[in-house]
Amino acid sequence: MGKKSRVKTQKSGSGATTTASPKEMMNLISELLQKCSSPAASSGKEWEEYIQIRSLVEKIRKKQKGLSTVFEGSREDSFADLMSWAQENGASCDGFTITNFGTEGYGLRTTRDIKAEELFLWVPRKMLMTVESAQNSVLGPIYSQDRILQAMGNVTLALHLLCERGDPASFWSPYIRSLPQEYDTPLYYQQEDVQLLLGTQAVQDVLNQYKNTARQYAYFYKLVQTHPAASKLPLKDGFSFDDYRWAVSSVMTRQNQIPTVDGSRVTLALIPLWDMCNHTNGLITTGYNLEDDRCECVALQDYKENEQIYIFYGTRSNAEFVIHNGFFFQDNAHDRVKIKLGVSKSERLYAMKAEVLARAGIPASCVFALHCNDPPISAQLLAFLRVFCMTEEELKDYLLGERAINKIFTLGNSDFPVSWENEIKLWTFLETRAALLLKTYKTTSEEDRSILEKPDLSLHTRLAVQLRLAEKQILENASASGRAKRLQFQKKLDEGAPLPQFEESDIALLENNDPDAKLPVILHKLEEVEEGQGIEEEEPLLNGGKGDYGMGTGANGEPGTDGSRRTEPLPGNSSAQKEVK
Image 1 (cartoon, one colour):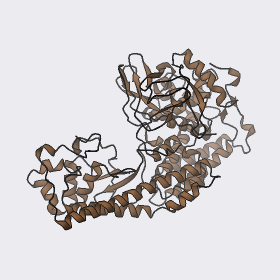
Image 2: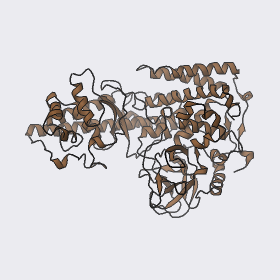
Image 3: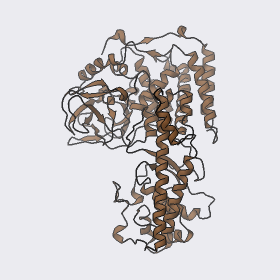
Image 4: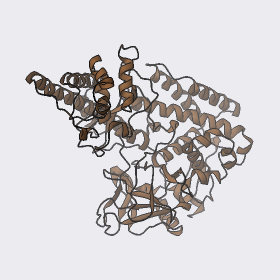
């Protein structure tokens, strides 16, 4: 359990440079809650709203200086206690140790050779911090009465973490003391670093994250101070914004979904020791063994002694990594940029286009993604663009023509164009759209590369510029790909090339290079699509993220690997990449 003399130091408010009376603090908190609960800022006013919210938060932070809970000693000092605690409680600790890997932060290093697919790490349920353990803790009485806690497991975990951090005798103290004191999520950015993201496709997610966190903090500050069931909480006498920001970031960078005890549903959890693993490209290799009631991880590849052990966090974009994990992954094979597209309801052919799209299982307005690789568009986006660019006669053919039902299933198949003219129009649209988006950035790719060459950049500045540049590179690739395809199909049209005709055996085919290429469009899980957005194609590309802390869990719905054991895959794998101190 570690040395209790090193558990924590609670600084008193007398150490603050500016103090505030309870009434004054409550007034500031109420003002913050009102500001963060107001309707969403109108287009173009989001940055102004962010500045106003941040100004209020900084006033509160200034008056709370000295109130945050801190631990004595360095983070590295806690790792021996973490390993001992893990071993005492049934986790595997043989074959690896915790090591500082420089720019990658802390991670797991092998102490022996480990073979690919070898089970090398398991963590029993009793070591996990879960929504269920929160319900059975000092937080339980408030949880049972508060609908927000009941609806948002990630917020419950954050408050659970804070309550346990404030208890020197907490069972999870060795784990909590091993967590970083600060993170590199945008919640920790200076204002000028956030400003570097203006004009990017990711900026609205960053602004929403800050607003949601501030709103949650204000709400729970008032709850802690006024709710009768909160009198016994360790947070009662000291609950600062910095504390909540730390807890939010701890959960956001580490939360995962695991099955409940009976396996009937999933719940959110923090998984000690396992969350020390850093990310690389690969496959999900973590699952949950219901028989042994533990989280299990098999090796992603062969590891020699003294090599770093990696896991795959899931198919996340760099925007998701930067916003929710606090790092940028240079070789991200799954990087992408969100793009909102929709058929305008004022368009004469709207009803026909919406009907064809509906038959293909695609909403008339939705969020897609442009990918970093070729082709830059998915089968779903190809199908949408084909319908978006159809003429009235082509729409009638796909609604009423011969074999109309079968034709719907070929919309996402690149081998079967609607017409050469349609292909030219859709690739021209993509080329132009990507080029227009590039013009919204305040810097060029060349300027960003020059900035990144500077040796004195802060980490947060570097992360913001890296993300900004990555978006541009994806858009540049999409525009270039659009141009190449446009010229390719223009040549076919000019040459009078015959249009490929599909056979009955072809109707279920999509793109041959897609992992699930044998599925028709309508059977695909449209993970890229966020329904109900109501975004017209002409509107600005400012959007929120479904991984936003304030909107629900940030865990990816990625499958796990169960090997030969009866293991349930972890539905989410939003593990943590540690920041560098």
